[in-house]
Length: 130
Image (cartoon, helix red, strand yellow):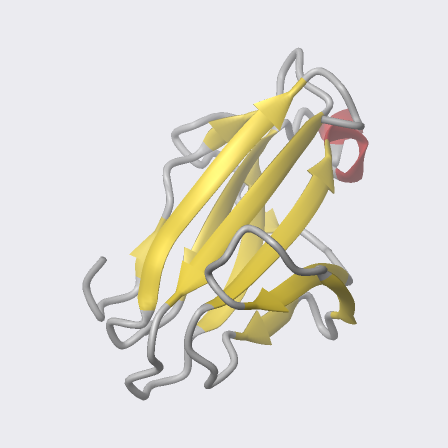
């Protein structure tokens, strides 16, 4: 992934109940890699607006062992920390989107990761306990 701002593909949660977003980063190269989420009414970003979230799960180390720590998010955004090999996970339940107004699509945006972002994955599931 380049150092330019990253906008992930839009993911529809129609007929799904949860999306797990995983961001893995390498050595921090500068910039302000702010992570935000948006929601829209379709994958063409119709009516796109901020998606509120207040928690992320974080661990340091690329190894599969280790414990994720619950970390508070303020103002619906957080900056990737200046720590190599950090993994962040964000869990979004479909009911957290504004489904009453037809919002069932989400997008992850990372501003200026400076070459630090190694991967950004989204996994959707019909189960809340995937």
